[in-house]
Image (cartoon, rainbow, N blue to C red; front, top):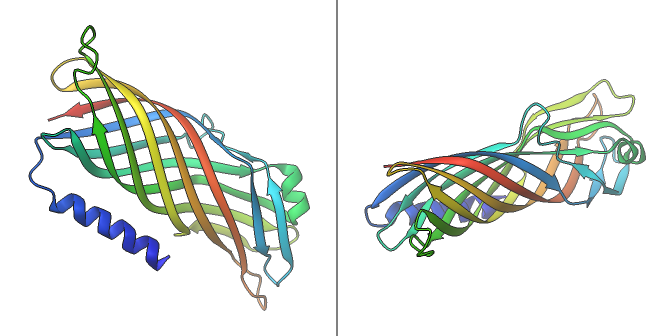
Length: 227
């Protein structure tokens, strides 16, 4: 965790040390998000070992909805630096919960991914349609999910935010300029995160520790404002 926070700090410092930006862009988006299957392993409170391939669901259109936003400072060379936050989600299936001995395990008030980004855009790439601008980007940061977990039969429910590990982001998209300031965009995003999650114990028990790598995929639709 210390190394991941150090990496995020170095990227953010590099962004702030960059010469004055020619343009700032603020973007908000919603979309359709999914989560790849992955293995959840570790121990339950009390020490019982667990290891299970989990069929995760993203449920992007269920409340709370999937969404995100970012701020990018674009340089004159069309390289951009900034910060992005995404409120993704991950729910374990009922069958996997039973196999793990859990009554609930979800990152449902956000499997929140915060990254420092570097981006590149190509304005004027399409001579016949100059309002369209393609772009790509990537980022490094941390995962801060809201963990909602409970062991079957336990009176204790884990319910709160945890900083769980390193996160990476990649994206590619296309922006359509409405006018000098406003634009619409669509993009594909993928995120990866390495999560070490604490499950709260009942009195007299040791805390549980669950580890899982999560990969999310999303198609986003959004609006941006440049100034």
